Length: 166
Image (cartoon, rainbow, N blue to C red; front, top):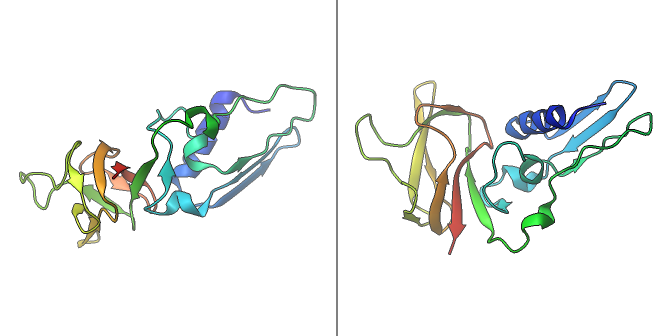
């Protein structure tokens, strides 16, 4: 049987990886995590910024834990908990690479928290093997959170920015 912490860590790891489906069984418990295709899209809705300890609502569509004995299932974050919160949109990494907030070292960042963006606005660059890819917002709105740090390596589909759409 998984502890709540172990289950949250597994969900968070799967959520950050390019894996779409994860199955696990050890004889005492079965676990199935299937990611929604929308979680990898730049227009994926996000209910509200949450700490990493609540990845279930952000990254997993289904989790099925079946204990072999009458154990108690861990409590999961529910999407309905923040139903009244405004919808937020993630700008995700279109490829793997190193995240750079500015065009060059010492230059002003493309965007900061509070900046307004348009779909064409470049918000960062990703560098992989000396190839730089500009990432555009693809949405109109306000940057409410920068999820990654300058110089951090990011995976395909990993959230980079959180935008409050207009």
